[in-house]
Image 1: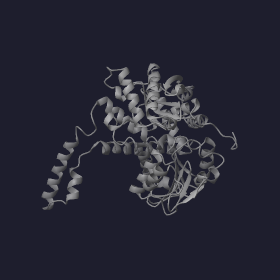
Image 2: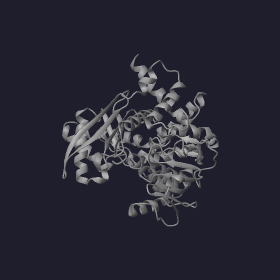
Image 3: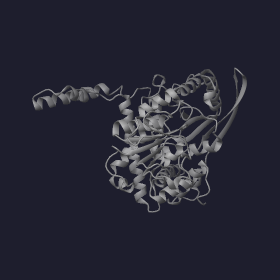
Image 4: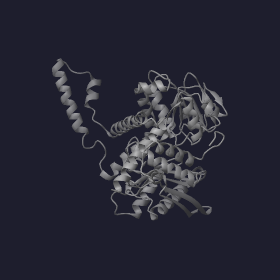
Length: 471
């Protein structure tokens, strides 16, 4: 394949898989078994709305069943198709394996523009979709667990959970049939920010590895590093907010649907987000240069480029002009296969999507565990930790002969709550997985980049499960 051709999203995922699988010594046919999508279901169903009946088309792909339940988001968009759903389901399989979350991969979509419907209509449509998923065995806490994705959110997950509970009133784990619910309806604190927070933790881990930083032609810390983000949705907003407020990064450009804004001295992410909510666009944001053709800012010089919206935004047409030293893939599949090859040949350090945006499914896993255990995180041990903290304070004060200041006492006396435990679990996951990917990269001379290493790590873990199953 030459660089004038563009692969589809699914082809790109499969090509990346094949490259990694070739570097591993697997039994004949096992790579094909892992790569193949086990099942894809297309559903067409009618819904009675105010204007009459409408027919909707939806899909749910179960890529693998080496572990259950299968896990993956539910996307509402007018452009979705079966191939996109299959590609996203495959990515979910590899993603879960990489970050040691015991799920198989799944994905779902409904071909709909949610902005064209009222809240009441969306609820009616979503509940009907849940019924279709349920009667096909594609919904349930032990079988298949959707989550929010593009065009969906907490409210829709609540509708699905409630519909499932009505269909299965004796299932005490019914709320675990979906994740991404509001906290008051069985959700977990930190789920909304999870994917963006995972991006932050992944970048922090890069900066802890001096040899990787040298490969990326960077040094020091995240403080002051120039970052460009494409997409200020949930993922892009939280990633850049945390990188700016907690790590001191310099967000110089933000790309959105209507164009892009640039300020080399930095943009306040919170201010831009509020402006976008008020005006529905970024054009006109004060103290920033506006570019109608926002995509051109993907090519602007920066330290880190964070594509956080759609797949395929960097392809063979613009890859050669990308000047970022690091590409942090916060979206699914933002680079085509051709673009990935071009950028790797240029020496661009790419942190792959299958690892970097796994924060969402990791925290979804925590929410699912909470639903199955029926206990809020921190409920059993928070006060115990505070009691132990008081004992430490007493010992310190006896030793130094004076009382600690109020701030020190507060820090030692605060036991872990749900949000701190969730963040701790997510950070541990991202740090551990980064190290495992690096071991693959350093341990096999056939593995030439981090995406290949991430896929190889996933393939090896899944292969081990399949081989154990057939003993």
